Amino acid sequence: MQEILNELRDIKELLELNQPILSLRQFCKFADISLENGYKLTSNGKIKYYRPFGKKIYIDREEAINALRQHPVENTTAINQQFNNYIIKQQSYGNN
Image (cartoon, rainbow, N blue to C red; front, side):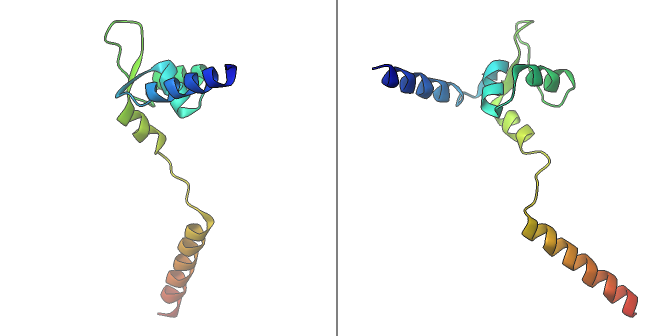
């Protein structure tokens, strides 16, 4: 019975994260970061947030997704391809 209740709680939390506007706590859960890190992101201006009622912080879900997509890391195949293209380009400049 406890296992079913835990699964229902997990489902409820996932549904809450699908809202268009997230509280800071929900954003931190969504981004899998600590609440302290969430406060740092807002205070440093790294993520846009709203305070419609003065104290509580809210974040637009789409803006949260965009913030999480910053600084993508390319896989090694793409990096190797860029390196090879650079070497070929440098060699072609040297031959002229």
